[in-house]
Length: 242
Image 1 (spheres, rainbow, N blue to C red):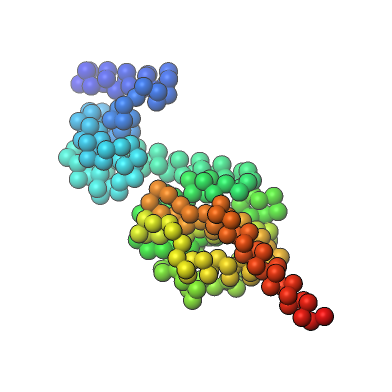
Image 2 (tube, rainbow, N blue to C red):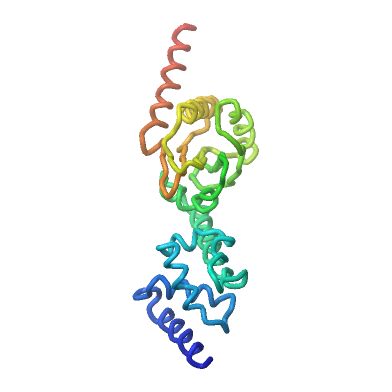
């Protein structure tokens, strides 16, 4: 028992002195597993987890049921693993909510990836932002297969007006893991950009999240293209009236 406690204490001291520098993946997992069972030796279980999931990320992304398939890992052990995941997500959310978005699709991906990566059906989320591009609210507006008949621009604009938003970011996931936009994704985005322009709102981006990857309409220049299309269409209509 003293030997086990001494080993855990050495790991804790090593972390407090230098952070995770020099730590092997299994040592990090061992520390996290012992948060829930501080008097239990978790080295064997940590090594088995690394053997099964290959990487630290793979372990942290595994579901509680999957982790408990490893002999010796129970509900109490996974407390530390899930705690660090949720703390990270909260940190990323507060980081985003406290500063401008600054057109960083990667920041949005980092924030929402953990919330959407294991979802078996599509979720369509909207981030509502103020005039300084700070996030006012995040809302899931639709769950299911995302197509033009399912996403209602009118309802989204009503929510934007309710929270006094100036701009919008759309985010949805592809359960297949491939973030490449479908023809329907492109049509929905164009429609939303057009409606937002009518309401004098700005669409900053539409991000599709896949398996540890994403597609950004803004990064690919498509949001700008749709804005130009709207203004050209509006201009032609105005000229016909003259």
